[in-house]
Length: 318
Ligand SMILES: [Zn+2]
Image (cartoon, rainbow, N blue to C red; front, side):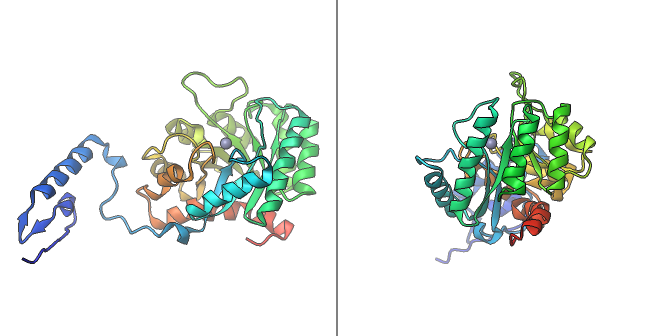
């Protein structure tokens, strides 16, 4: 007996026909998928006519948010492990920042120690890892000195700001002005916690406020505000802010909404590795119902375009 399998467009494509008769298994699969479809809002349902995705390795992925909290006793061992895991997922380049251990409000000495760890990791990576300088803007003068040490005079290519002080505060201004001079983008942790933010923890609206004061600077809203439906709306009119989707659960809809509200040019993939896995965060992009060319921008194109000026200034090939 010849087994014929045919697929047609719409939900019936999941049904398998055997010699023209629908099998019991096909009915069960079709019913299950119809049930799922009925329970999921239509804006989050994947298009059945979506283009086939490229394989992971074809994307030459850049991960814009990683940390040295991988296994290992030294920064070198930790970056070796990070890159070993990145290889499994087809990730070509990673941006890393903050050493270890972490503190919410680090002293200038602690900031320098953590940046030194990242500098060791970047050197060890032989061009696969790039560093962003971690700063505590409460210590404004020391932050400017550290920016000069790590970016102007060192190999780092951006700035990372975490939770020491909310980024709408005025003490951020000289730091952003110096970052602009150095062509360095600024990545700021942003989150809306239903349990209440840390005292110095920024929301996406805080970043939009800072970005409005510095229209020539390039900002990245890390985690897209955590509560991404609020976060994406908060930065919608701040055209010099790009949403970065790391952290959080691999929820469907974040990339689709970000592309719809901001445009594909203002969305970036990051994992927050090792706090979150590469796979769970890549799934937000690879599973998104957005055009193939949007995925390519999100997975690599946008960060390469953002870093092009500082790479050119430093003579680093992209
Ligand atoms: Zn992080």
